[in-house]
Image 1 (cartoon, rainbow, N blue to C red):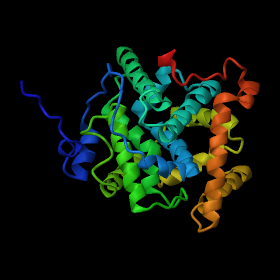
Image 2 (image 1 turned 90 degrees about the vertical axis):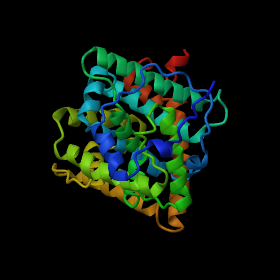
Image 3 (image 1 turned 180 degrees about the vertical axis):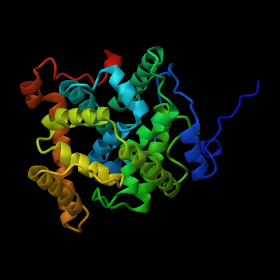
Image 4 (image 1 turned 180 degrees about the horizontal axis):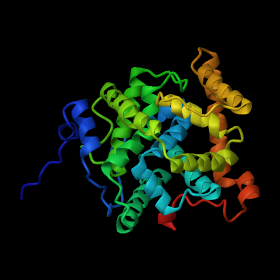
Length: 334
């Protein structure tokens, strides 16, 4: 019996960045709705260290990235259908769980198949498959590989294309590390190797991300819907309880700047000051000496904040009640 050797991702992906972009935009392949549990994979830890040294930049990139993903009409209609983000309370639970899952991906042991890392990954795959099936049966269409790749961009794409705005300084080794991490991670969450946003090196991945930023998300932000604005407002107001300095207009202004589209709504005084505060903090994170101190402070602050939100969510309980503020990171395991 001849066993067919699995093709390497480099052999499966399109040969050029331009061909890869065209594949993402035009192919209608959907995700696997019956994924098997993951048990073990050769996942590099190098990308985790990059995150641990820049938690604030990744938190901002991920939050604005999620808001960018909501501008995709295909993804937005599925989220509206699932009714998991329509109110401040449900948005709080959904997006706090997303942030905590992201924290798990970057901080937990990838070599232990019983760790929270694998529980998180299997839970995400299960949610994707079940939501895709529900949406398809309801007539809204299944989750496509294109949707997955555009969401993959949302978690780290801005890190590559707008590092200065996020106050992040990267060595070539760190960029290759995060690229390789997400290349393997993308495969593990069900993104086809043909579509995977991460190419053989960080330079090609960055070039592909630039095209997605300029030719996909810029167009989305130039023609946003009322549903998008409502969903973003609910998201920010829901997460406000985890960061009392969050302001909807200030965050929207910053997100629009990441896709190089002007935010048409004038900022009020508080929103303007809030925006300037965040821009200044991110800038200081990239300044020698001061930047090290700023990054170190926010690395510890965010670690504590994530722990409190998961284990002792006092403010969410006060605002939403004990039952409504309770999150379940791993429903597949209960």
